[in-house]
Image (tube, rainbow, N blue to C red; front, side, top):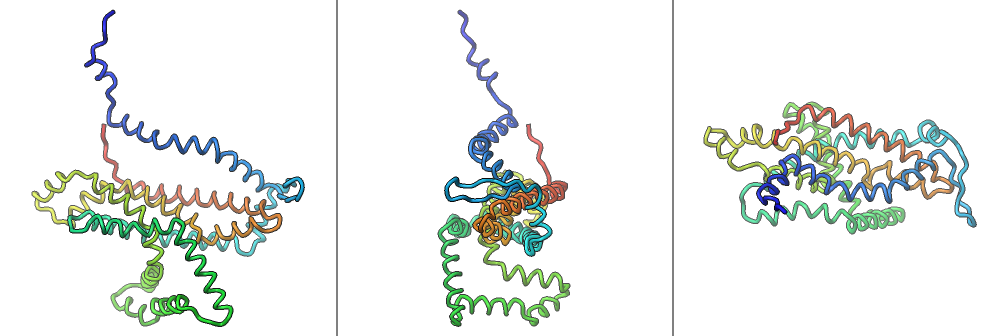
Length: 320
């Protein structure tokens, strides 16, 4: 029997760059798909079913459903005094955070990509807030908030509350806004800068993942491109806008979508808090499910609109 030529076999099994990328995509996507269809899909179907019913909890039989149709959605949109207002507040917060997070994470990624002593240490320092915010620090902040509220109810001002009031007084002062407008900035831009200064702690905490994604994209750019631009007389500023920014622009969509989802699903989000509180109220699971599904539609529409707007400004490098 004639044996196959090893060279022919290697050539037949060789894959193009695009095929290798597709295999990589599926390697990362398959675990999610398995978890979604085997675990999460049933939970989503039950939640959708609850949103059209009144979930009545019984001590003996667990719970039973009473069909309400669209009543839960009608109550959430037309009768609940806070739901629609909270959604509007969440959208405004998201739109405010997106430019700040993207600009900050891109700026830090460019700085940390430069050759300097202790670069690995500084990268870890900027990513530490993401690790701390995953659980331990969130619980600690919650405990501090509860403790501060107890002391405030007793008429004692806590140091954290006092510091917050001092910071708010500084950034909201008329003198500060007048100082910004003296540079020719409009009152709207001045107020936006003041809001960014107030939220700098949150911006730093939620920018770690975006920073790492941008940093990985910058490091994937061949140094030969920068060397060629330098030989042609390009400055560092021109290299950034003509090389770095176009080549990492596809990652802007990734980071924007991640920032939108992170903003909408944060534990500090006012809608998430309202849905959670509604879930644990007496027979409130149906209404909470309706609120969650409507909120999901709002998030999906925001992601689609923002993606369609940004993708027109994205440069895609063609590879085979």
